Amino acid sequence: MNLEGKIVLVTGASSGIGQATALALSQAGAKVAVGARRADRLKLLAEDAPGEILTLDLDVTDQQSIQNAVAATVGHFGRLDALVNNAGIMLSGMILGADTTEWSRMVDTNLLGSMYAVHAALPHLLESKGTVVQVSSTSGRIASAAGAAYSATKFGITGFIESLRQEVTTQGVRVVVVEPGFVSTELAGHITDPAMQAMAKTMADSIRTLQPDDIAAAVVYALNQPDHVSVNELLIRPTDQL
Ligand code: NDP
Image 1 (spheres, rainbow, N blue to C red):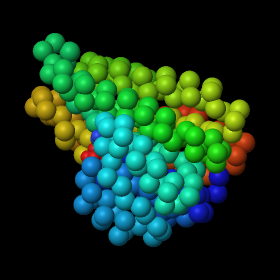
Image 2: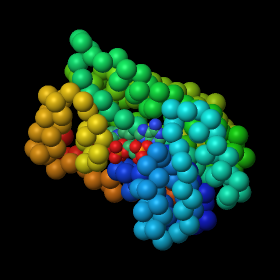
Image 3: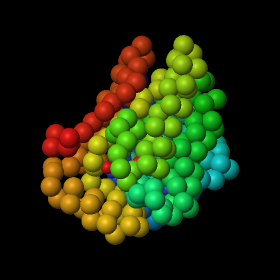
């Protein structure tokens, strides 16, 4: 896919990896629809991007909101060539005594939100022979203590995406899973458990973390491959992270 003039929808583009990816795609010549709940952040992104950006109010926990975002993208640009399923939250904590509403929020956002986005986008991607890029995590390959529910969502979405790949690859739709290690973003700032917050900060201070641009570059690499090349999985860790 040469990205010039391609239409890409990026979810969770108001900060971190999604924001950097939207910018990188715009710099590569794509027209980008960006969705998230913080409209003010999306507006700033649209001002910074070199190419055309369509900003969308999007809450991925609301299936109708996702359907509206996909419809608005196709309505505005006329087609959809790629979906970057990036919106996500990480509310780390131990299982014992957990606030299970945090589990529900992660499942609704990271797992169901991504699944609904695929469901809404797929008819258009079949038409364009497009691509789904799913941002999963190293936590979708290796589980660890205090990451149970987050890992459950990331293992879950990786399984969903592999099924998707088998259903659509022979119809020309490519599927990419991106699995970052520790990236410096706002993600850990939403953790409510002070001990977990402190652990994330110690980790961030002790290694050279990845930056959002590092992951954006990987997404652009995968999307830039010729049609017959399907980069299915990209596992990217900071060199210093075990
Ligand atoms: P950020 O917190 O910076 O970005 C998360 C993005 O998701 C924001 O744009 C946020 O927008 C959006 N989002 C959250 N909830 C919703 C919702 N209900 N509807 C729409 N958008 C939503 O973190 P990252 O950039 O780090 O996270 C991006 C993805 O990368 C996530 O899926 C995360 O799991 C994954 N990841 C991150 C790693 C890291 O170390 N940072 C490592 C591995 C994977 P808004 O709040 O405006 O709605």
